[in-house]
Amino acid sequence: MDGPSRAPFDYSQLIWATILGFLIWGELPQAATLTGALVVAASGLYILHRELMRLRRANAAA
Image (cartoon, rainbow, N blue to C red; front, side):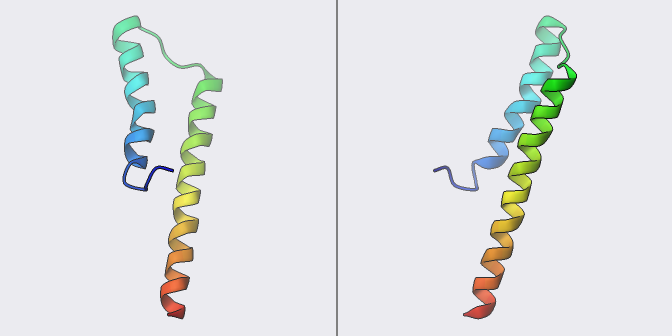
């Protein structure tokens, strides 16, 4: 399992792939691709938020 320090780099791959795809091949992602990327990014942000809340509750209880 990857640690949280690697997550921003994983999500930045979506952005770089889009930029390079446009610059090299002149392609823009289709609506379904953008929707999927948003779902993946939103899921990651939700998990990050949930884990931070869990950590804060554990620290408050200690």
